[in-house]
Length: 222
Image 1 (cartoon, rainbow, N blue to C red):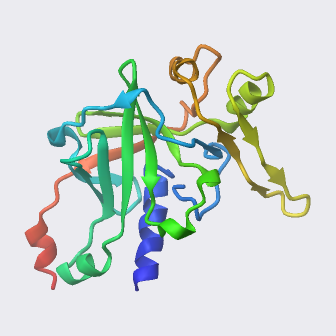
Image 2 (cartoon, one colour):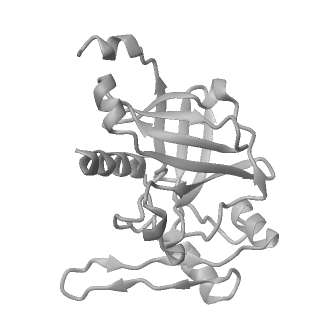
Image 3 (cartoon, rainbow, N blue to C red):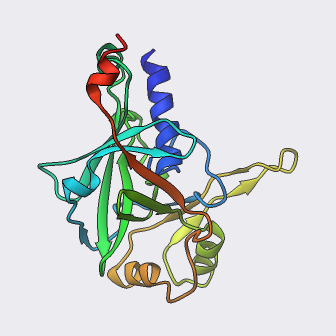
C-alpha cells in the first residue's frame, strides 16, 4: 500500500509541476522536454510565497488533486502531497514532495529538492527536476526545460554541464539526460531572460487550477 501510494504521488507531481512538480521523478523516465536537471535550486533568492495564493488543493486537467502547503520555517519552499479520501488513507499515504521556489529578477522557478527517496538511495549526480512557474488568480502555469535548446548551449560552452542521453536503436527510447553543473549568476540570468533563445516549452504549459476542497466531505465517505 505504501509503495503504491508513493508511486501515485510521484506520477501526479510529475504531471504537476509534469514532472513539477513533481524527477519528478528521479525514478521515472524523462520526456523530450524534461531531460534537463540542475544540481541545486535554480534562482538567485528564495521567492516570497503568499499562503493565501499558494496553499490549497490543485488539480491538473484529468489528474487527481494534490495539496500545496507553504512552509512556515523555510522561505520559498512548499510541500506537495496527494489528497486522500479518508483519514485512514491520509495517514497511510503520507509521502510528500518538497519544492523550492526561487526567483531571478521577479521570474519564478521551481526545483523539486526532495521526492521522498531515502537519503541513502539518492544520487546527487542525477540532479533535480526544475522549470518555470507562474501563479495568478487560482491558476498555475508550469513550463519545463527544452532539452534541445539546452543542448545547443552546452555544445557552444555557454553554460556548463553534460549530455548523457543515448537512444536505443531498437526501441527508439532515449535514456540519460542533460545535467547542468553549478550555475553562476550570469548563467541564471541568461536562462531566465532567454537572451540566447527560447529555452522552455512555451507552447506546452502544464495548467493547474486551485479548487474548493471540503475535508468534512471527504471524511463523510468513511
